[in-house]
Picture 1 (cartoon, one colour):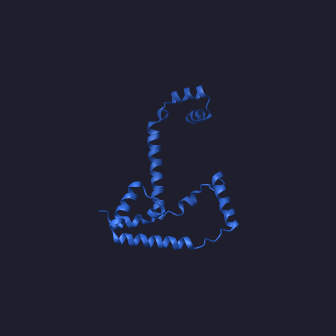
Picture 2 (tube, rainbow, N blue to C red):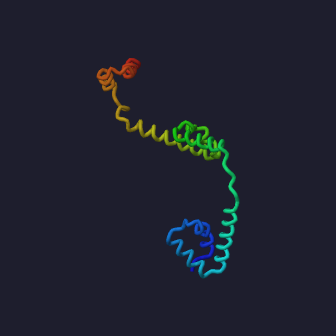
Picture 3 (cartoon, helix red, strand yellow):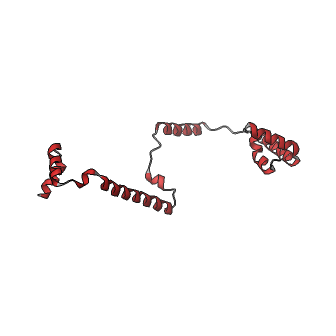
Length: 148
């Protein structure tokens, strides 16, 4: 036997034809044997009929133009500039500090591991001189001149 609460949660989707085959057969089977859910279904049907009778006011053309302009901006990317201030603004202060701390720790770990594993970090002076001569790199030459 299906729980009435589960069926009541699905009644709106049942009326709109949005249930899967399994859900549809389960709801139909339950409604056939449950007078309480039959009354709830009739109430939903009456509500739906009364809402259908309410006239829908026309949407002003100016509103349509504004909405379509925004859609076009989002499509072309003109109105969707990613601003870090706008991104962080809705976050609580504690969450901002946690995110900033996480980024700082990740950068520190990356710098530490990167400098420890970088093959060029432990080159001797003669190796640096050879690299400077081979590449003609002004930075390497400046480093060697500063040590002399």
